[in-house]
Image (cartoon, rainbow, N blue to C red; front, side):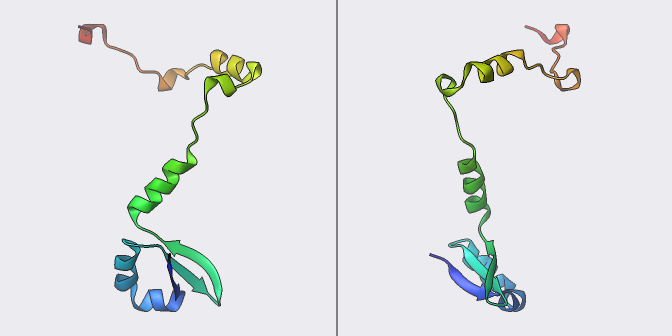
Length: 87
């Protein structure tokens, strides 16, 4: 469930809606239309994590597997071990 408020109300009482958003999404409207939601950082991160979808390698086509196999890490992104650091 979410609370519905106007953008003007949020502007005038931000602290109230900030605190409320820690417990539930706050739906903000402007000129009667839904424009944004205020959500807690935890909710935001949970939503972003849910966007990431794991795919089993068995579900990939041969062409996709070949592309992955042929991929190379750019030199500037490679991690190089210092031979003196190896144990």
